[in-house]
Image 1 (cartoon, helix red, strand yellow):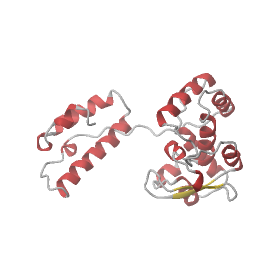
Image 2 (cartoon, rainbow, N blue to C red):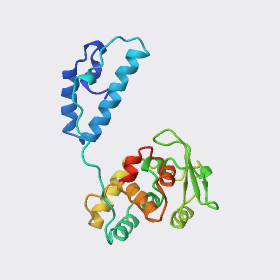
Image 3 (cartoon, rainbow, N blue to C red):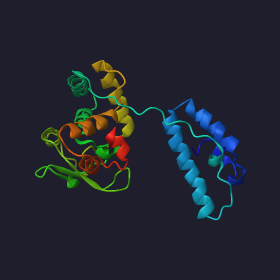
Image 4 (cartoon, helix red, strand yellow):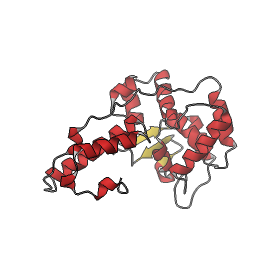
Length: 225
């Protein structure tokens, strides 16, 4: 955002039409849902500046139409896809990919939460992983299945305490995409594994409050879906 020409404009000079041009330009690169989130964030920036910083400027985001969020994804692992996915991940040059995919499928954790895991927060005896830093800002403790525990036991211990030391989001993205192509699987994002794991919790008989506590989701509508 800071690299965009819009960032060099004075706050008072930014109009709705400027935000609309930015919106349309952004829509050519990312999904409408992403643009909508970006605009909500940008609108919040103007509101904070106006209310708390004493910058008396109109919020131009209010003057434009937000893009529709798009249809929610309901992609699940189909018959045979899990085996093919794990086989392809096992052959990846990135040795961390397979345990990451296994844990995502078993625990409902987001990719960022997995990459921030530290051994000091994992209790293999009690089969739990504590997440002090999550997307919604609230800590939570996630139960670990026997498969998740086995995947963690097979990992080497880092001197720095990180479960996945030095692994970046970009590295996971690239190795995951290559694994998906090798497995011959289409339209399966890494985040879909979180949805798969969440649905499996319901299939095991957990209620919506229990699943909300495990996944950290505050929006019950998503869990009902």
